[in-house]
Each structure stands twice: as structure tokens, then as C-alpha cells.
Image (tube, rainbow, N blue to C red; front, side, top):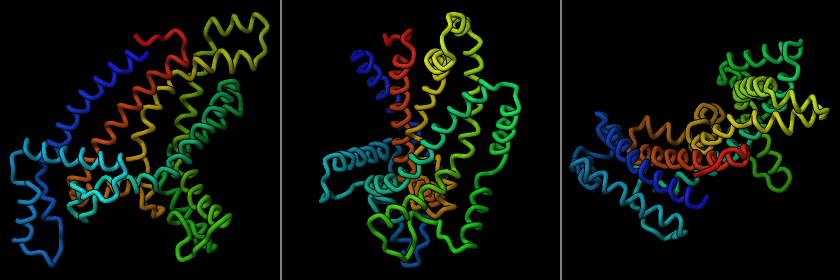
Length: 330
């Protein structure tokens, strides 16, 4: 296991190096000028040209690549070591704020909403999917199937807008991470935070529940038709043991792969809901950086999300050995 992990880390480092080159080159070769997007009336063309020189934007692309990742890893070391007095090398071209500390702060804002949505999706999808698989071709199965396809078809932003209108018409605050203009602490502060976090988290989970439920049902139906399941039933094992001990373990294998997508989902999975519910989170920050042509923020987000994706794939591979004893990591 240790040798496998070490070898995979080496492969991940090589893959991440190739990704860093591709993402930086594609972003840097964009015809859009990030300095032209800075509509600051106080800055003259001479000021913008001086800033271009300071950032090395007229240098060869290889020099710009080396300079960017030199700054990135210097700042990453400062973040890991907790040096608050560090002079940040990598700053936003738009706001001049340090990129990595800002990204970390935005991630802490997005993380609770992401966790709530993920927990709701996974805790609801498996029981409902297993139930529909066991009740296949019954009225309950058809009803849940219609509800699932309805949730998939309905746009999430439309549901969110209707929910916001419903509560705002009744004077109930729902936007932003907390009630604006009110300073709450203790139990009241916790309940206020839970309310503002729970509503968008649950609404954002609707489509995920509908899609994952269909996957769980399909996987369970396939496994329940296998010979070893029929053998377990013929031995007189209880339906609960057959379903949850024998069938569910093998039916869950495809979903281990989905874990790889959870970590990078923090970056792109909540852009719409963060914008609608006025959450100053990570997805909204990266989206606005794309609109503002903020090269350093965009490339940093791509690099970090790629690293999280590779880490998620490694975790999935290791979890396969837990879910299926037949799998061995060579």
C-alpha cells in the first residue's frame, strides 16, 4: 500500500506539472487584456504600462510561467507555515489582494454550504434509491421516478428564485450567510447561520438527489439479480442481511469513484447558488475573476482544483480496497 501511494504521488506530481503548463499557456495566450479591463479612471495609460512591466506581461511565456509558479509556491509556503507578516508575491490584478489568503477565506465561506449540500444529497439518495430498487415496478417506484425526473427538469435557479420570493414576501431573511444589519451571538447566532446555510444547501441538493437516486437504483437492481444474491436468499438469510450486507456493498462501488469529484466541487459546484443567495464564496469569486480577466486568480484556481481532483482520485482508489476485498493495489 505504501509503495503504491508513493508511486501514485509521483505520477500525480508529473500530471500536475503538465496541467500547470497547459492551463497557464491557454490562459496567458488569451487575446483578452486583463489590464484593459481595469476601468479605473485614476489610472493613465502610462500607469497601466508600468504595471504590465512590473508583472512581466510582455516577457516570453516561459519566463511568465516560471515567475508565476515561483510566486505561487513562495506564498503557499507562507500559508502553510502561517506567516501572517509575509509579503505576498501573488496578488490579484484587479483588487491587488493576495490570491492564496483570499482563496482560503473564500473557501471557508463556501465550505459549510458545500458540506450541507453534499450531506443532504448522499444521505437522501441511498435510502430512496435502495427503496425504489426493492419496490421496483410498484406505484411507489413510479411515483419516485416521476418526482426524480421532475427535479432534474426544473432549473435550480428558478426554484431558488421562487423560494427567495416566498420568504421575502413574508419578511423572512434568507440571503447572504447571515441576517444583514443584525448582530446575533450564542444560540440565536447559530440558528441564524443554520437557517441561511440550510435553505440554499437543501435547494441546491435537489438535482443531485434526483440524479444520484437513479444511479443507486440502477446499481442495486443490477446487483440484486446476481447469482450470489440469489444464493444468499436460498440459504435463508434475512432480507436485511442480503440487501445491506451483501448487495449494497457491491452496489456502492460505482459511487466510490464519485468521491473524486467532491473535492474540486468546492470550486465550481456552487457558482449559481452563491450568486443567487448572495454568498461571497469561492465559486462566485473565481467566476467574477474570469469575467474580470484576472489571470492570476484564474490560473491559481485551475491549478488548485486540478490538485484536488488528483487527490480525490487517489482517495477513491484506496477506498476501492475497502469496499471490494477483491481489489488489490499493486
